[in-house]
Image 1 (cartoon, rainbow, N blue to C red):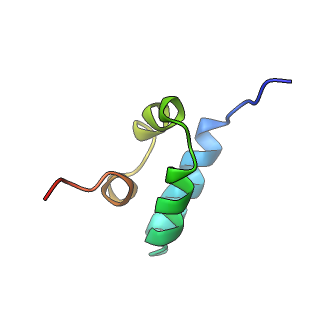
Image 2: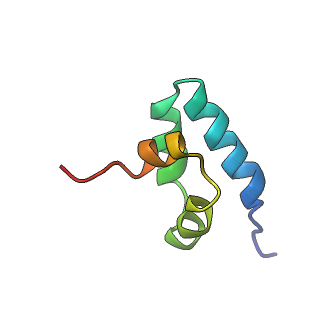
Length: 58
């Protein structure tokens, strides 16, 4: 049985968590996603969520 990813639901969870100030949860959830899922999700995330999961390089 193949795993299916509901990108909209996952993006919604990340967006709400980032809006609630739960950055650690966002980073943990993001880190558990494979690269192909991350690339699909990135376009669905709010600016705030994107800043948490993909911080600018120092």
